[in-house]
Amino acid sequence: MRARLVIFPIKGRNWCFTRSIDPAAVESAQATSKPQVWRELWRQLFSGGERRTGQQKLELVVDFAAEKMNGAWVNMEKAPAGSLKNKVHGLGLKLLSRVKPSETFLRSVSEDITKVDITYPSSLNSRLVRRRLRHMAIRGAVNHRIYFYGSVSLIPFTAALSVLPLPNIPFFWLLFRAFANWRALKGSERLLLLVSDCPNDWRLVVASKNSRNAKKDDGRQMVDEGPQREPWTLWPSEELEKLIGGQPGEDPGVTLRRICQIYRLNETEVLRCRDSS
Image (cartoon, rainbow, N blue to C red; front, top):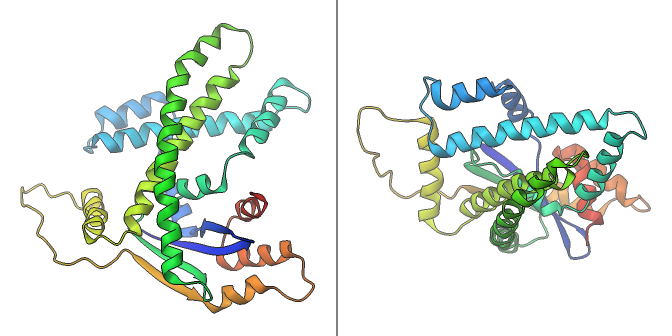
């Protein structure tokens, strides 16, 4: 799958790294059948006709847990004002506001992405753009691996609080942070493969694609296809350069909203990039 990354300076030396929303990918994800109850999850893991690798089973379990957590979160949002669930939802929003925008960007880089189109202002150096992406991927892989193991190690201690007649907020928060950091870790590793200068890393991208889409049952070995083309394409944009400059006297927020509309970006995440230090 091909994804579009949009990169531009947003405030001083602070850059915005975000992924363009692909309507086709959203529709495809919605059309994909996902288990809704434990029985369906068990059937797809162990009783389905399709053979799944250990990695695919883990992805299925993580997606199932994420759906359950999203459902519980939506129920809290709909709770009456002043209720305990509503207060817990407000606390969760405050905690989520502290999550760095870089983590959200890395979580959006899924493992099914095999090519990226990198759009950036024409005034930026292409080597600088790729270097910043590699730096973010390397730093993200290190940090989110530490955060993931740290969250997982604390989950058993917070699980003991379930005996109290109150919502076990620390347990569910650590469970969510473990999931989020695991996703960001996988996104960091994938992004590093996609923007690497090493052709051997490009082969890993192609190999992972073949393993998902073209399993060969006749026992034939994969043939070496020779030199691989880089999985990234750089698109310096004159239009984005002009949009960043804005119009004389125009509010910067209006300029950012126009950029989000043209390039199909998540406006909330872009504004968070602007407000982050």
